[in-house]
Length: 369
Image (cartoon, rainbow, N blue to C red; front, side, top):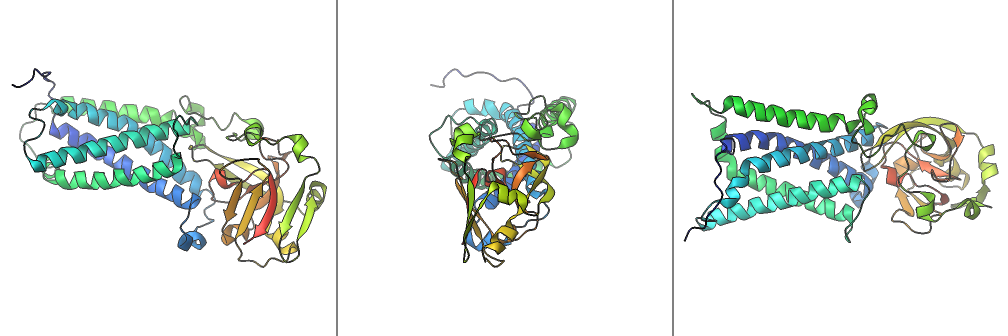
């Protein structure tokens, strides 16, 4: 016996509306996927790609990661609109009509589940809340490929419907209502983008009403993700600090001695995976000068060790092109002020076109690999 199911009379729960929203959602997902892939490669490059990572433009990661978060937030609005147009089909009876139809529905279920999981865990990540037991970075990367694969499969299955939708029709009684719906969805996407993208796009910073960070409101003009307290670093633990540089001619150098060396001042952005970024003035000693003093020739990758007691990025490896770059500094000052403890006192790394998590704070050791 057929069960009693809800009756849906809204005319916009139709394939044409679903395709129209789907095109916009697909574009957002493609941008989000490609920029996320760039982020992952910069943070965890395959061995063969390590020497190919670019140091220019210095704002490259700031742009791609800002686009990644902005397109992800836009996709959340679009996926809700898309699900609204198609959810009556969840109540279709019978649930499947044939084996191919069953496979099609299962692939759609996979696409929806993976997309919703990817977008909403990404949203929670930019809020820096991690209520799950798994590694966000590895899981987010793996599920992104599931989304990409299931989206391609879905497009292949629905290609005939998409082609049909592009054909002109003599009469479309729902055209005005459909345009109104798409306009409303577009306004919602625009509102979310306008009120969040300012955390990366400086001219819109005044509108960051919904962004988790306003980079203009922060100690020394730069937000802080990981505090000294979280890293278990204190001013007391930094007393008597000296930087150890390992090489053919290893040496130790105190903070006073570092300050006595020729200083370089550069303006570089710092950009975090959560989507915020800000330009700042950094002053310190070029890393390549410190390595040369230890007898290390150019072209060597670098291992940087932090004073922090525990953390995923306590030890960071830097490809040779970054270590040799004249703008890569062991920074001692931020915006012409001595680094605060939360910003990495007594010394931290700043390098062009690198994710913020790789701009190691509380540096204690440099070692050529």
